Length: 314
Ligand SMILES: C[S@@+](CC[C@H](N)C(=O)[O-])C[C@H]1O[C@@H](n2cnc3c(N)ncnc32)[C@H](O)[C@@H]1O
Image 1 (spheres, helix red, strand yellow):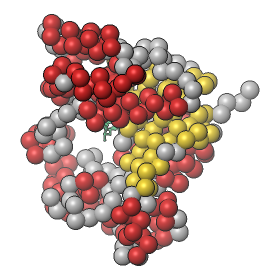
Image 2 (spheres, protein in one colour):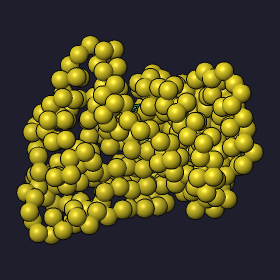
Image 3 (cartoon, helix red, strand yellow):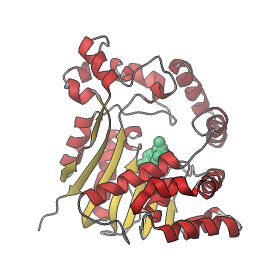
């Protein structure tokens, strides 16, 4: 779909009263958009990639407490953490977006495609937990709360990650997946400060950030950096609503943000978009002033898994 038309539709829907607006937007996503054929594999895989960052640093996720900012429609990353041995995940979202039907669809998929799930997780899978989950989906009268309890997931929504009731020093791993790009810089700062409060001394922050212009996923005529041509005022006209807000911060901005809150960056795991690189090299896209001084290499990054640790004074 043409991205400007999509932006217009999102802007209009966001003007309706909240409850109607949210339900209608979900209905559209479910029937025509990204939730049409909901399949948990991509999200399980994303959860596994976060978990692997822990292992890459020689640590273990088993019996650890994970925390996720931005649950979204279904707590699939927390499910992945549990399937790999996590003790518990606290997942928080400003909006109570979780849809039970997406969880039941996911569980049905997992039950019917057990071998695919076993292959996906490989040696990271706690097979007993997978078997228990399948038994649970076969036997129990399903409710959202029973599922959350079964997989040791504490779902807080509505809840603001910049100001939680979670105890000091109580989580091992702070995670988010494709969430930070949707939050304003000042709020992100507060979320990191709050994370610094609730994380244990040797805990890790693992955040996957998708830097792409999200409109490019449904409009193939534009590139992942299309939105970098607009000034803030121009961009606000397209995507300043609750469904498509994108802060357009680039990788270097995030690195500076984490560092400014006392973090040591342990891994960046940047992914380069070759098409964006070509466009930038050829100067086909006229960049807005605020992006002109940035390195071509930085602007070509389409996503990154940033792993950091808060430095504590002894
Ligand atoms: C793109 S969605 C999440 C996607 C989800 N992680 C996934 O991979 O499917 C971003 C989520 O972040 C939530 N969010 C935004 N600001 C937040 C905040 N301050 N605290 C907690 N959640 C927030 C939004 O409500 C939204 O559900």
